[in-house]
Length: 253
Image (cartoon, rainbow, N blue to C red; front, side, top):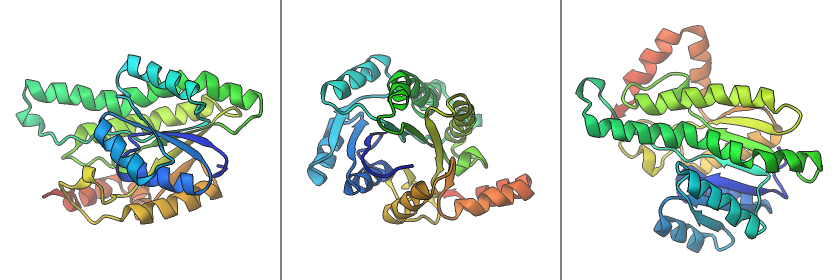
């Protein structure tokens, strides 16, 4: 991936790894737009990074996705790089589910899986046109998770959606070969608000960003960051042991 001269859209980009990615991309001379559901969080992100463009958008809502595309076009920010980073992680015990839990589960599936599929579909005509005109190299980056390969039992829906996003990314890459680059990123456990209830060894957002940029510049369709790469190889050798190891280690605070 060319790390300079892009216009980049990052969903869920006002906090956590989304915001640190936005900052690093801007430092390399890219134009960066982020979107999120909470206006105050978006405003805070722009105060930290005045060159950042922020748009309020719930990516799980069709009308708001359409409005986002229109706003980006109007502002001259039509992206050639889309980073599908927005995600939620709910904790569920299947033996104790109630009706309210199913509402949350539906929300998780919409945000983590259906939204990136819908957003990519919405922006694909513009991405393919940029490739046809050889203006800028179009790229889709889907942020998945090691939990999509080896599920963590306390967050079963999150892991299931990430497994599905992994499968979708493979199919999308095959269908768009020669037109749009499709990259999958597998972050480690990063010290962000999403992980505040998980008792697990984590890396800092800066360490995550440093390694991500190095590997994006080096190239590759699938990028594992940090110690997650070891889990990948353990799973190939013994899926049962990998599952035991992860669920023995990952605990709630």
